[in-house]
Amino acid sequence: MIPGPTNMPDRVMNAMQRPVINHKSEEFRELHRSVIEGTKYAFQTQNDVFVLTCSGTGGIECAASNIVSPGDKVVVPVSGVFSQRLKENFERFGATVIEIPIEWRKAATPSQIREVVEREENVKAIGIVYNETSTGVTMRGLDEVGKIAEEHGALLVVDAISILGGDRLPVDEWKVDVCVTGSQKCIACPPGVVMVSVSERAWEIIAKSRRGSYYFDLMKCKEFQEKLETPYTPAIPLFYALDEALKMLKEEGLENRIKRHKVCADAFYDATQTLGLTFFADPQVRSNTVIAVNIPQGVEDKAWRDLMLKYGVAIGGGLGKLKGSIIRIGSMGIISKVEVNETVSVLGKSLAELWKPVDVDAAIAAAEKVFASSS
Image 1 (spheres, rainbow, N blue to C red):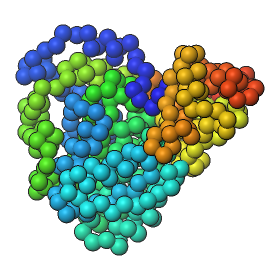
Image 2 (cartoon, rainbow, N blue to C red):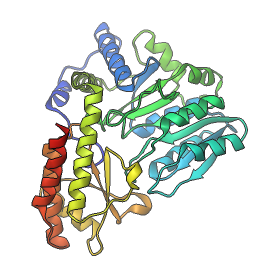
Image 3 (cartoon, helix red, strand yellow):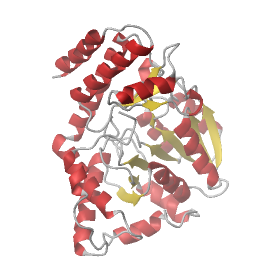
């Protein structure tokens, strides 16, 4: 129950047992075609999409290295560990980043972003972490930011690594120019591949940019993808797994998966609050995929997580300046009532040992009430 990698269906795990094939073969081209179609469905896009063998951070580096040249201005709201990484990625490739500092429990608003973009001249891109995994905060109003970027001739680059498939993100409708997500979160696939979408507006910029990375050169990826190939050797077993995971997504239906994530998150919030715990994120920007819970006074972070692990449930700790002050529960992927209730039960059981008596039955009942009303 950490915020990724997530639990995976047996179908996805078993897919990786297929024999490795020649990545220049017709068999791989058919696999690649299927993965591309599934990715476009997940992103709700007609744009080009690419599957890269790397972690989510590699996907962010890909976006930054293809878009910016030295001296380009990029606006990035920073409200946690991963938005800080996004900022640093742009800076690594020579961008001048205009940071919008945001309190970590909050999210940037479209009006804050508009004010900065209108004040600055020649902004090349706006970089947004849609779901800040370190704080359990989702930026609401991303569709408005897409309009702001288009109005001012800037690209909208979105880190959707811990949210795509778990909350609404219609890439084309919201005018997202470059979107990055990871395999190991809401898609419920092993870690090691990322998916990147690229708009026509982005291609115009990419064609003129310095493209500072050799491995992540999207122009080279596009050239090979026209033949349904990849420039370099892909992680073929992970392609098998991703193909199966995307097929399962389509079978469930994207809207149904998003609703399932919302219901499970609501159950977590109600049940956890019933245990007497509080949440780190402001209520209006709480994530449906990462539940950030404040650690009660007198409870030691590692001791709590170790005890939960002893009872069979792994959760995440805080990152950066939040280390030791919050826990993070991943509510993503194949999350269901079973995982929610088991996690709530272990949360309560461990709190009773480390903190004070809590009413676990009442917490489970609160979760069950959410599930009953949703069905």
